[in-house]
Image: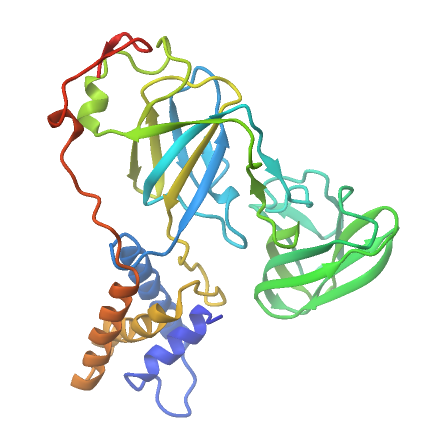
Length: 384
């Protein structure tokens, strides 16, 4: 897939920057990356540019009707539990949702603390350290070892190993081992997202070893091992009962006579979702849930966000052509240039094709309160 760095270089060539045979200056790359981030983030909320629908699901807490929603351990509902290398941000909007009773969430991740929120079960030696959500060593000899006791040791299961690394100097090695003997080793000498499919052979005491040398300067923010074809978290099929949720407006939420704690219902029926600065979401229910209930939402999330030049851009082919020309048009003014008439026509045609492929059904309608009379709810003791 195309990386942000590759797309930036191709986009700037449309306006002859930095010129034939010249190398792109670091400040040009940095400025273009910021422009690309702005472009992706702004278009991710439009009707035409639909980055993707995902399903998020969480175990709810009793006596709690207001939840923070976003990427990070500071949030009640962690959106970054979903996604591969980079976890999902807070949703742009919630498409539909339900509360499931009588089921559990299955975790298929094999690596404890795979995104390094804390040390967990990792064993560190030398200059290797875990802090600020990375495992890293700076020009120091060190090792980091984690046991993966739940892998299949029959030699019949294929796993997907995902690594998100920033390598500034030297080589960092990742060794998969049985009983302290490596059966496969990966040497990473460049920053990027790495994905390998491996078969864990029969053996005993399975571990993963990260090794740095005195010449190595690196950090790893994700080291994940999941059975191939599975998501990190999954909801079992055919378990539990689903109760649909209905979105309401801020006005309708304010009009509720009883909210949250102390309500009479056993589960939420309606919800209000808003996003604030910093991609943090706020989710409010009309009723408190029962402990152990599972909340599931189909959400629109910006899965195409990039944070560094080596990040891959997860867009369909129809969007990549438009993005290249749109980025060139966005930054051309900084160089005193502009796209010519033919390039602008290509940009417009690419946007039309993108809009056609991503056109969504119009879901606008009349407020339900105008279509029917209110009814008395025996669950909440109020008119709806």
